[in-house]
Amino acid sequence: MTGSASTSGRSYDAIIVGAGHNGLTAAFYLARAGLSTVALERRPFVGGCCVTEEFAPGYRASTGAYVLSMLREAIWQDMRLAQRGLTVSPAGPTLNLFPDGGRFLLSEDLDETEREVARFSKKDARRFRDFEQHLADMAAIIMPMFDWTPPTGSGGIGELPTAMRMGRKALGGRRDLLDLMFLFSTSATQYLDGWFESDHLKATMGWHAINDSTSGPSTPGTAYVLLHDHAGEASDGVRSWGFVHGGMGEVTRHMSDAAREAGAEVRIGAEVAQVLTGGGRVTGVRLANGEELTAPVVLSNADPKRTFRRLVAEEDVPEHYRAAIEAYRCIGTSIKINLAVSELPEATGADPASGYQLGIMEVSSTLADMDRAQALALQGIPAEGAHIEMCIPTLHDPTLAPDGRHIVTIDVNSQPYNLAEGEGAWDDIREGVADRAIEHLGGYFPNLPGSILHRQVLSPLDLERLLGITGGHALHGDMGSDQLFSMRPVPGHGDYRTPVEGLYLCGAGTHPGGGVTGANGRNCAHEVLRDVKREQRSVGVRRLRGQVSSRLSRLR
Ligand SMILES: Cc1cc2nc3c(=O)[nH]c(=O)nc-3n(C[C@H](O)[C@H](O)[C@H](O)COP(=O)(O)OP(=O)(O)OC[C@H]3O[C@@H](n4cnc5c(N)ncnc54)[C@H](O)[C@@H]3O)c2cc1C
Image (cartoon, rainbow, N blue to C red; front, side):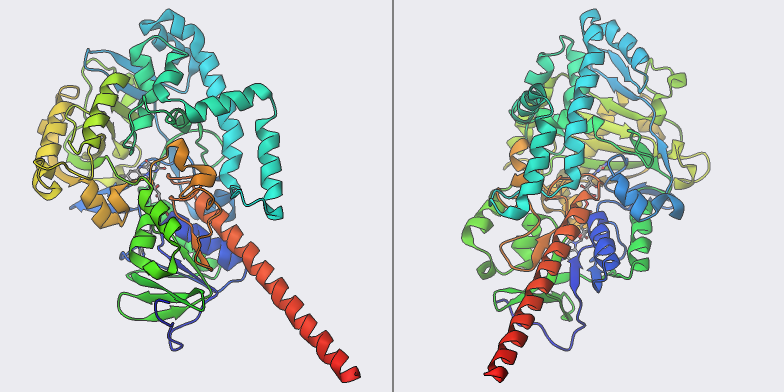
């Protein structure tokens, strides 16, 4: 037992630790179902990794997530996000730039993209449409599962419906099942080798495999991430990546309003120091200021490692579970740079009329180079010349910067949270690493380095400190196939419950993983409500039994 909850503190049906987008989503659904609910956020504003912050006077950027695509349609509708004013403009094409001067523009227009592919390989161009269709078919099987609670493998009767639905989906065609099994077990490299010959095309399609991961694209289990680009849903269910007007903080601002209107309390500047237990179950939380709040149910929006390392007492958690959480891979490998610039970056040789500046720009290399960069990162060495993603949100929303100025958002991969001995400490090397990344970008966007007015550099350590994410991991843990579905975060605990009775996980470290989907929070809230109803039924049955037996004894 970690200490008994004070009876003087306020009492709730449910407490949520953290008001990231998943915590807010859970708060909304629990409050809407009639539970008295409070979400407690450590920072002075809600949002977690889905926020807009001023990083230089007059310049605002999305500190964490910067493009929206996977937010579940049901959440858009239930929280009435569009009616509240949430506006998303679709990103333009993706421009991929290569060290050999190769350029590859990937757009939503398949005919155009096919012509681009043909510049590198006629054979690949003939297969491209089939490949896209194939991934779309796989995504159509997987995406509905985002809204399901994975079975734990306990064999309980409650798991039967999900198991049957999954079986029906995957067995729709035996071929689909085999393709899915292959996609989940093979590497991105092997998968793409089976389709294409052009290294440029394979790198364009496969770089997602290294996004916030310690794996390289040739690591088995990384092919699944290729579905990522096909998994998006915009507000009307149309697949696309988009920029949110006002930055990503607008998503969580509207979510917070929706949760409050549904009856939830949302408190900011309220850091939880400890989850309290008593009698073998959760009893509430203690805040960093000593205040105690009671509730029979606590949901943690913090990542699994942070939850169990910092908030729950060691003696409250079975050793095997704690060990599995420790083994869970959650080592961030990206640095984020926000720039305030005086002019638009222009890529050498790219035609601005193609709209490439509206979209995402990838400074890429081959999959083999990405493997080498990731191998360095795994050894604790920040890789130079690594893959970089860049975008210009002010082209979609000029209000994010003063008139005529722009913000540029940059994500540099293969930059490990854990540095090897001799590499120094992030606080000492951060600016130097950023200088080299910008110099690298300058090789592709020659006017960029000279146009910088201000910059914000966030190493994985800074992301951890600022956003409260262990290892600075953007997704609350690697998305390899061994850490997904029923195995996220720990095999057999994919159903949001933890071994501590009454304690649930609702953040990105649960199914279906990271990204601004809201699915984790929504699914978790459904499981909490199922347990509450079950508890109410068993209390009702116990009360009924008590009444019957007291009547019988009176009759006797
Ligand atoms: C740099 C970066 C770029 C990204 N880019 C994209 C992108 O473009 N598109 C996309 O879809 N996703 C992106 N992601 C991933 C996405 O943002 C996250 O996976 C998602 O937002 C996680 O949401 P969450 O609600 O589960 O957790 P979080 O957003 O991490 O929220 C958890 C909340 O809990 C709070 N908290 C933690 N501990 C405590 C405590 N003890 N007491 C009180 N509060 C606490 C935290 O402050 C935080 O507000 C990116 C992430 C990062 C970091």
